Image 1: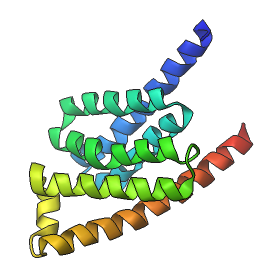
Image 2: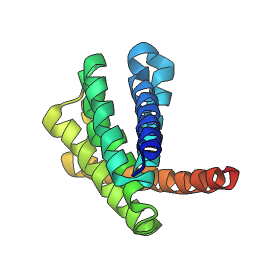
Image 3: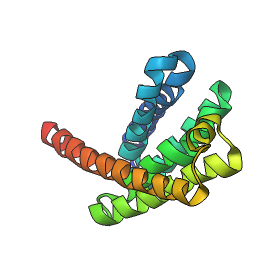
Amino acid sequence: MKKMDIVRFTCFGGMLTAIAVLFQSAPVFLPALGLALSPLSTLPIAIAAVSSIFLGVSVFFSSALILTIISAQETMILLFTTGLLGFVIGTLLYRKGIIISIISSSIVLSLGMIFLTYIVGIPGFINLTRSLSTPLTIFMFFLFSLVYASIWNICLRKFLFHLANIY
């Protein structure tokens, strides 16, 4: 790689990391509005993973490292839901196709939500599933993940298509 390519690669990764951290930490600083902005942290990680798997891994883990300083709970949410979703979508969308990407990302998101609910015990997830049985909760998580991952895959594909037409 040329020296200029390395500089661009590093700068691009740094900007995507900063954007991911800003979106994921939004609920800490802007409680009401932040909950709407937090899911957008999937986008910069997915863009990085589409560009390069190495860049996707770098942005994913550097965002998690910076978020650890801000909020441990948001770090866990990034690692097991929004960030992991972005990484899987970005890695698979153009390499394996949209169907494989939707199925894989929905399974990974479901497993992350189950992990955060039953093993880590994130309060938001526990309060959401308190009155439901475990099999119903798992089914609801998978159904939500399937719809959510489908929306992200379709939107990211359209966004990258329009972005490619601009440049």
